[in-house]
Image (cartoon, rainbow, N blue to C red; front, side, top):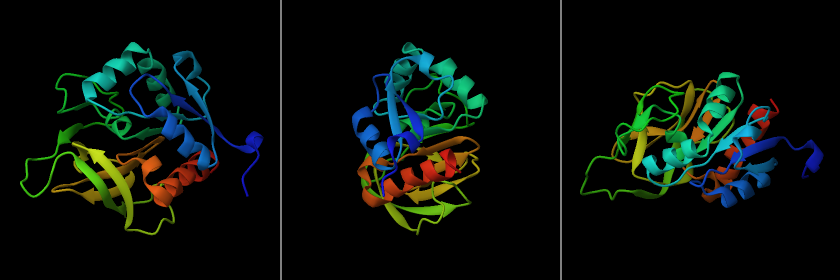
Length: 214
C-alpha cells in the first residue's frame, strides 16, 4: 500500500545541469519518497536528505556543480550529518578527484581517486550492461537484499577497493571495484538504480526505510 504524500520522507534532488534528474526523480518517487527538485543552493540547509545525480565527463560535472553554487552547502550538510545519496558520477564526486580530469577537485568527502578501467581486448570501455552485486559489510542500502543481485552500469571510471568505506557492494569488470558504498551518512551507487529494475527499486526503498526512516 502506497503511503500518503504527507507521510513520505522528502529528499532534495540537486539539479545543477549535469544529472539525469527526471528519471532519478521518478525512481525515487516509486521507492516511496517525495522528491523536491532544486537548482537553488539555498534549499540545501535543512533538507532531510540530498540526492546528487551525475552523468558525463568528471570535469564538466564538477564545473557545473561548482558554478551552480552547491559545493559549500553540500559540504556543510555532509558535515552536519545530512544523508546524501550519490548516483553514477554522483558517487565519484564524493571522492577527492578522478583520473578523467587530473587537478579537478571532487568533494573530498571520502579519501581516494577514481580510476579508469585498464585497456583490455576482452572488455569494451565503457562498461555498459548488467553486473552482479556482492555485499561487503552491512550497508543500509543492501540490508536483507539477496545477493548476488544484478544492476545496470554505464561507466568508464570506477572507485577502487583501496578506497576505504564502511560497507557496500563489490563487482568486477576486469578489476574489482565498489559498485555501491555507505560511509557514515554518505551513500552511493555507481550503477543506475533507475535503470536496474526491481533491484534498483529495492535499493532506493532501503535508502528510504533504513536511512531516512530508520
